Image 1 (spheres, rainbow, N blue to C red):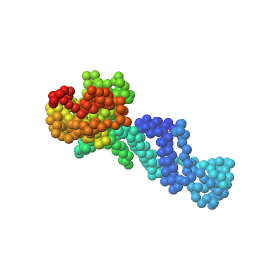
Image 2 (image 1 turned 90 degrees about the vertical axis):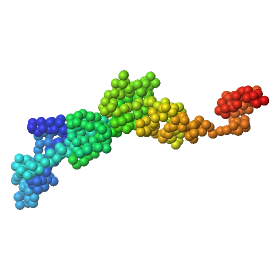
Image 3 (image 1 turned 30 degrees about the vertical axis):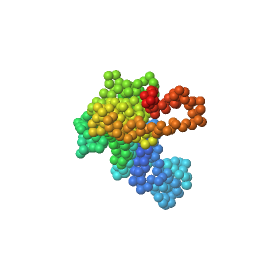
Image 4 (image 1 turned 45 degrees about the vertical axis):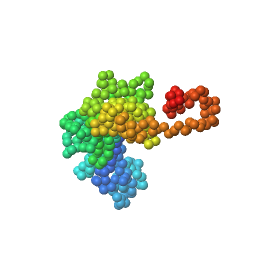
Length: 409
């Protein structure tokens, strides 16, 4: 048994995570390359390696000819006399296996064989690392800050280095060498020099993945993160939904005394996080998204994806937020273009009053459709409607109160 070779293969498989079969193939190819370098050709050279004992045999397949004068190519043919020394049963025209002693290879051939093995190991190592991190693409990993490369930062992820570009850094964040941080893997590219990994600290998915790691209910699917909007380093809004009526989605994300959300805030260096309930009703969703501001009314148009919001006068600045941040994040979170006005401003602004959405007038109820309402449902009795539709119509039209006629008389 070739113990040294076996031990070397075991170490490579364990440390580099390269399969033994790949290494065996590399050794076979290196020996064939050495033979080609030594003899000038290797078309008839075969290499066999025992996968259990790691013993290998390198041989050339040669055709048996009558005499040495009949030999046209030493690499492909062998005279009968020499063939009988290898196998007594050899005859002219047979093909026999002639062992090649690898120790006889020259220095150049040996060096080439070594280079073939090393090149294959490097390729497989890069491939293993690429596959390992390609599976983690769009996920969060922990890295160690190494050094600044200009305005970019080199981060060690374990078996590979990643680049945190300036555009993916949170403004104001400063890292020290050896500091451990969490980053979001944007992209993994396979290059001749190895995998190139691009990471981010500003991507909204970073917050989402951190919550998935911190909150058990999100991991098991009980709570879903339906939407997320982020301005890195400043504020994040997140809308959550619970598939279990007995589980409070917001409470699960916040945790006891804010333990869960505070852990994520600490990782994000103090970035504020607003967690609101998701609602299928656009009006309710927009109202939740604009929290902590109080809302008087929301007029949402699902087709145009626009919304007009009325807030109390003293809440206008809170609803808009500093430099418009609260309204901007709410618009990203909901997907609606939001226009916010105070009650005073809304009185004179079209589209901000309930009357603007009532597309009928008093004359519409002077003549009614008997087929639609039914003759019995719309019979007047002593000036008061019998049906619920008639009551609703009176309320909407704001008819004159009772006793008005008597007063006129």
